Length: 190
Image 1: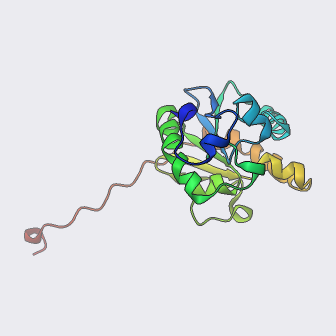
Image 2: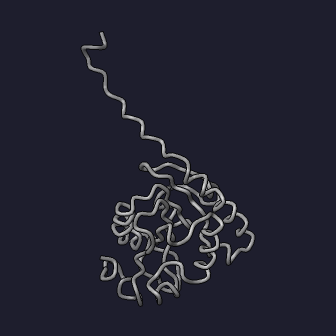
Image 3: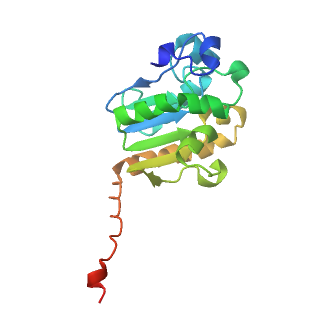
């Protein structure tokens, strides 16, 4: 359980765990990187300035927090809002996996490079942001984290354009996985 987790050192440093919140039957799940100061205080994801921008971006896409589920790769705030460490992401991976399994979203929107790496390893966010990928029967859409637009104003238009694609991605069906090729029986080859 996230609220009592001590799988890494962050569990003893946090004020509150931030497990995630939203519609448990959401078609779209947003996965950020880690809670910040305000999220740690409130025990809720995306409640600071980046959260206000996320709310605005959701509204532009015809969505609200009531329609989606919002979580983070890490469930506890790293000191000084530093980047997540690999061991911390590994320690939290079971929690995120359980959320994805329980909610079973059709679309996962990753917010930031650490979230993107969880679903699209080896990708570079500047090359793939706003594009649609299919992984494990789901649509995965990597996007810049809303905080990036707060620190680098020129990214706001990029993030807005990426969010504008969401309604189309939500309408697009996920391709059925192709069946694995069956080995030919020796007797049928001749």
